Length: 220
Image 1 (tube, rainbow, N blue to C red):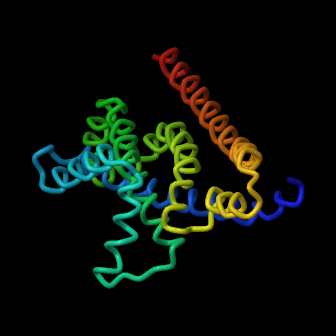
Image 2 (cartoon, one colour; image 1 turned 120 degrees about the vertical axis):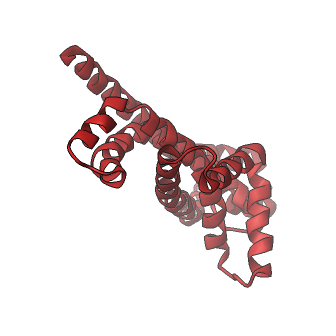
């Protein structure tokens, strides 16, 4: 297995890149749409479309979303490298969760801050940009770190569209070497530190948020 290990490092880097690029894009899409959801009523057309999008993401398997991106994009004239098809599919999936994370984080902020900003003469847009969203981002970070763990593991499904990420590379090597169990174990070993690292970051951020909120309560 020593000779196989270096051959899995470039695909591991592909896994990391596709996961974190998707997470970065999904974070900002989720923050934007989650903020819009919080500002406008549920019957607003944008909110209705957003809610349908979240429902679609939560109720369909990620493999269907990946195949949809792979098969439908060329039909509308969008031809991309398989790496970017993977990014689009993972972003589509993750953004659905990030919208809910963003909406919940914004909703958790005390209503008195909205009222105080109005007394200061700030409009809704200024209130969101300068007061609400900076606080919401801090509250989003623990869940977003957990979402990073989900994306890293979900990226293995991109093997179905022949993206040479870690899982696909291991499958190819299994066909040549017939070392199925050994390569499965090696995949787990390579995934483990990344997933554990993101989970650790999520726990640290969660504890910091809890400590910060406790200080606020003590001040009150």
